[in-house]
Image (tube, rainbow, N blue to C red; front, side):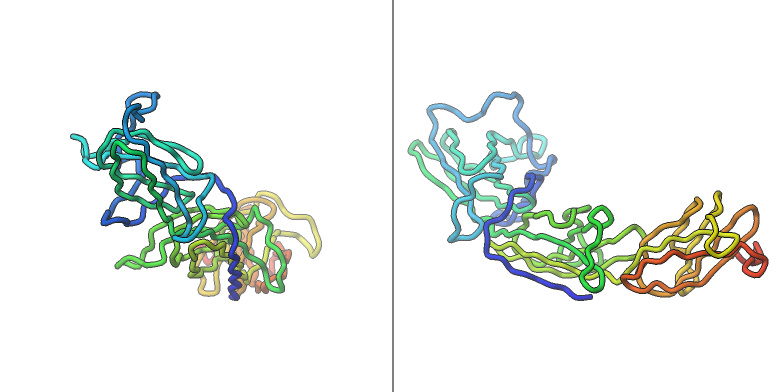
Length: 316
């Protein structure tokens, strides 16, 4: 596997905003917003910003010296004390860039989410207008994968999952974002993330640890050593595929890893040694084959007496 990292000091591209994980800030610890279980939504559709209160202008930056983010932010303002149900009451929200709220004097918690990046800050509102800014300490991640020699992989057959960089005591990692499409930009808080690239749906999987830096777009491309294989059962070399065939794929150790039904069995496989078993009309046939990275193949299994195996042996 080769991992190519290209650091681009550029403004982040827009992607749809989504639920965000909050960072610790200003002494606020273990606060996760806006998880639906963490706050109480307003009881009506009318704005809860109050006229006659203090005006507070909120802005956010990717880094402490960065420019204000002009769009894509979801702002939520909460009372800091939980209600009787244990949830934080949300008093106001806004979408876009810099936002202005008119709030009653008092203390509040403000959460800004930008894609999957987020930050939380405690603010105090008085009668006089004031301004507060939140530093998200965030960057972007753009993922792609190729085959040996730089051959592009069809985007529909390629997906990424992004996990926390640090594993838990049992070895598991918390999933942050599943099913990320290639070449889409994901906004994340700065840090190290564990990325899993999946080509196809069997065993072509590449894992990488990738660092996201604040204020930068990280582009990472991984190389899959795999190929697309198509199996068919034929009565003679070059013949037509026999319909109603059941397929079972075994790895080099003899463990079953994939089953399929039909005239053709098409799948993406990591390079290595395999055995394919075909069953048709109570007859079982098998063939050993090798997957070479980047070399797509069509595997023909001959339905002849010489290639047939005992049904009980095939079941094992």
